[in-house]
Length: 290
Image (cartoon, rainbow, N blue to C red; front, side, top):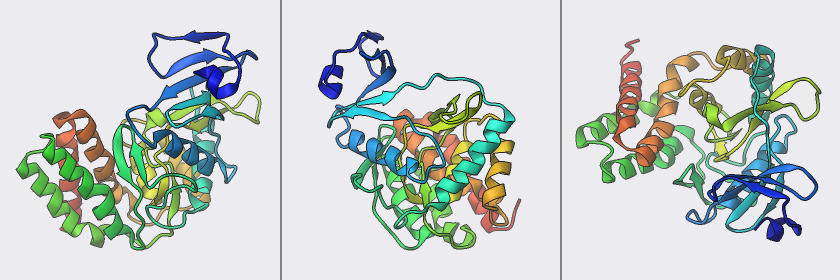
């Protein structure tokens, strides 16, 4: 497979035959080989997303070394630990990437498919002009339906989330331009690795994107979900470049509805409680209850 993607046989393939696998190329470089056989369009979406996120020149992404419809070969990134300085730089660079913008809410990266993926869940890049309505229709309700149909949510739990969707538009904060989102920016999709251009520094590399045009607070809310190293420094760096609108911490829960419902779809009812809690937090905000 590596020979087909690069034209040369690899020196070695490390792993148990599953993907992703680490590969030593003929020239000694290390790479990661990924398969997307069961997810049509996943490779095209990831390649387009990585290139789009790299375009502003603010954030590093792994180099695409080869790909076809089902296989993707990427530059290998050795992991290291970030310090507060690296986290602050990451925040600044994320703000610059968001500011590069998108054609519309829901817009796919140029060359990327409309039918894309977030993790192993399908994601439709359907465009809209009004963020709250677009977010409810194309980022919350599709996964609410999938989670309910799959048994991850009870009818009562689904009702709580539907009620939050009714009040969400009035809580969305001031209008924003479509931002250039990573789209699945939980901490596991930030790889802390040596910076590509500054020796001795660590950078947060963006991997595994579900890139599309969206609200910048959505990426930041995802970073808050499962723990992010030095998150306070990330936020401080971000706000050096782009100050966040008043009340943004109160809106974290409504932006987390989308990724939490995706987790219910992918991993089952174990995430249902968190999704319902985010919906209840959104309802309390609508009622002026802290």
